[in-house]
Image (cartoon, rainbow, N blue to C red; front, side, top):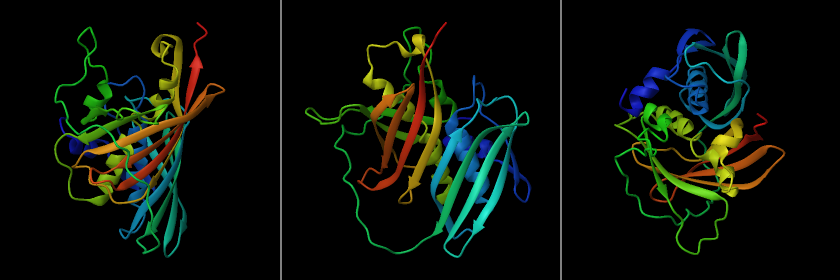
Length: 275
C-alpha cells in the first residue's frame, strides 16, 4: 500500500452483524498502532448512526497491546439515539480479551455562537520527500511509512514562549476520497502521532528508548470543524505536566489558513525499566 486512502480502505472494519464488525491491521508491527484502532472504532460506529450526524468527540482507553497478526472484533453498543445527539460505545477485542474501548458522541449540524483561538506562529510549510533515516540507514519512524503519512517538523520562531511542546505538519500520501467521514477518520489516525512523545521532550537528558518503557493510556479528541486531509494540517502539541510514571499531553489540529479543526488530550505511561 502506497497511499493513505489505500491504508484507510484496508483497515476499515467489515460489518458482519448489525452492531458487530471485524477488522485487520497494517503489518509488520510489534503492537498495533493506537491511531489505527481509534480510526477503526470510529469507522465502525459511523455505520450505525444516520448520515446527517458526525462525531463531535471521542474518549478512549488503551487496555492491552494489540496483536497485528490477528483480526480485531469491534462491538458497537448503541447507547442512545436522540434527535440531535447520539452516543456509541465501541469495544475492540482480540483473543477473547478487550484491548481498547471508546465512547463516541455524534451531533447533527447546528448554528451557534462562535469564537476560536489563534493558530501558532510556526515555520513555513516545506515537506521533504525523503523519509527520516537513522545513522544505520533504517527508517527512523517506520509507522509513518506503513500508514502512508508524511511529516514535516515545524519549529517555533525565535523568542517563542512555548516550553514543553512540538509542532509538526502532517499529510497523507496520495488523495483521499471526497467523503467527510473518511477525512475525520484520517485525522483520528494521525492524532496518535507526536502526542505521546511531547512529554518526553521535557527530559532531554534521558535516553528514553534505552531506559524507559512508554505507551498510550487514554486518548480524547474533540472535532470542531470539518477537515480536509488532502491538504497538510499542523499538529501543535504541548505537555503541561508529568509525574507518577505518566505524562499528560495536549494537541490542536490547524488548517493552513488558521482554522482550528480539532483538539486532543492523552496520558502516556513513562515507566523506568527495572531490568
